[in-house]
Amino acid sequence: MNVSILGTGYVGLTTGACLAFLGHNVTCVDADHEKIAVLERGGVPFYEPHLAELLADAHPNLCFTSEYAEAIPPAQVIFIAVGTPPGKDGAPDLRYLEAAAHGIGKHLTGEFAVVVNKSTVPIGSGNWVGSLVRDKACEKAKGRFAVASNPEFLREGTALHDSLYPDRVVIGADEEQTAEVLYTLYRPILDQTFQAPPYLPRPEELGAVPLISTDLASAELIKYAANAFLALKISYINEVGQLSEKVGADIAQVAKGIGLDARIGTRFLQAGIGWGGSCFGKDTAALIATASEYGLEMPIVKAAREINRRQRDRVVEKLLSELKILKGRTIGLLGLAFKPHTDDLREAPALDIARKLIERGARVKAHDPVAMDRFRKESESNGRLAEVFCCETPEDVAREADALVLVTEWPQYRELDWEPLAQIMHTAIVLDGRHALDRTRLTRAGFRYVGIAC
Ligand code: UDX
Image (cartoon, rainbow, N blue to C red):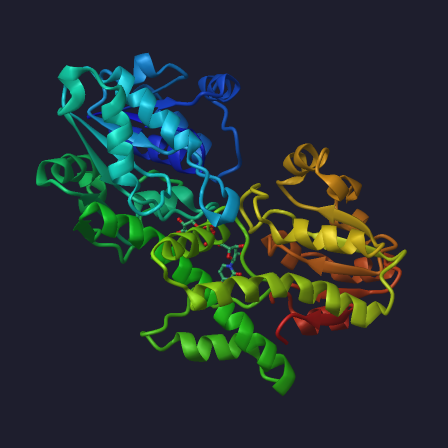
């Protein structure tokens, strides 16, 4: 099928690469000419494991452009995967979505096309996008398109795996004909009939992928409700973690003990400094904002957000309690990205923690295996974050530091040679913000080990 994808962020580019790999003709569109130039040269504008390889394999079926006039007329399916960043009052900023819908409308020719919302959009956006497209469409095209919702559940760092081998595919459409176009598009994924790329092997236990075919509003709500539930799980284990610390329990064992109940599940019960990233914060805020438009409160979701905010404060409180004075101290952060295997810094706990420490007079040094360049660029004009001293190696972070904080659980930090690090620090304290390090090993290496929730 001929597919066009508007927006080449994590969601748009991953979707484009996967659909092209499956054999569809895909055009990826972005208003940012520089990004398009990078993609045309075979580059990838952000870090995502295996994306460069998949784009190279899918190359014959892929093209990149900034022109809607090129991308929209031949497309049978048009995905909107533009950014919906958080706006005021928690409601997302929809200006890119609006521009995309208008751009589609202007260039529809009258051949039947399905416009698919892939961006996380507020509930009710399907109808809104439909009206925006219609406003700009010529008479011939007005009744010749339909809108569908196909929310994305990919995690950064495992985006391609999550897209090729999803737990489920959700398709929201108000007419059967529209949904059928998308079943055809996703058939190779639903039936798992494609040949898996060697670098992304198919999980052995995977059978056919379940399809949830529903109305527009339900599909839109599924996305928010799923992300809010995952955020709740993390905040729940972090709340239990606070109590666990007081009573001297082992939170990892507690999480395992409750998670092995199949009704609960073991995933997203990893205690630590809480969630970051572009989705959980934004989507929980948007859910609360939508509910309030209907006169509803969402006290559980609000509490999850509050607990997550507090986890970051706890890092500063713990350092204060260890060092007594933060002014003039040097704190080293291991990890800047909001989680391992990405260079994404959106809502990254490290940024918040660095800011709080600098405000209290500490000097902050930091290292990240892949996010350093992005951090340098983004922090340049970002208030006090510009004061963070970027280090080339974890050793440079440790040198003369009063404490190290493990903020992002990159595998290479687990494997560090801790003994020499303890020797070059001013005081050998490590705060394990992700419950990821081996306490016994660190203690043997000469560290005072401080945990979150332990
Ligand atoms: C998330 C959802 O998982 C995905 O389905 C959705 O479409 C987009 O948002 P992502 O933000 O890429 O994906 O990362 P995810 O792996 O979900 O982690 C989010 C944050 O939660 C990270 O900061 C991570 O460190 C934290 N986390 C995750 C925990 O603190 N504990 C856990 O047990 C799991």
